[in-house]
Length: 164
Image (cartoon, rainbow, N blue to C red):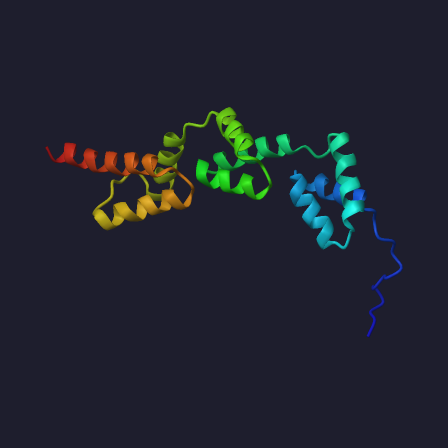
């Protein structure tokens, strides 16, 4: 049964206009835009031409997208492993990912320590199980095992210094 507000006569926007509308909301990688266009029923040739045109006009730029993603995710407290995986899913090469992470100049140890303070306050871990929970939390957020080990062992060393 049809509803009055159903409008099948409405013309479908071109792949270019659809992609431009998506980019008006937020940055997208070329791969992500292509996937959304294909899911929307646009053929590969039409979608490819639209993506090429958007790239030429600098509306879609993978470098800009990558820089923005690294900046926003690192500010949210995610570590380099998480960022690497997310950038890889958007089609970035390993060399480009390395360059983006290096250019961000993030102090990953300080970021991990800030995440621990935010989540657990300034209190040191009460026991080994708590220390392991904290380490798992940081690992899930994408921080390197060496960084996590350094932070969780530093916490244990601080406890030992306090008891002396």
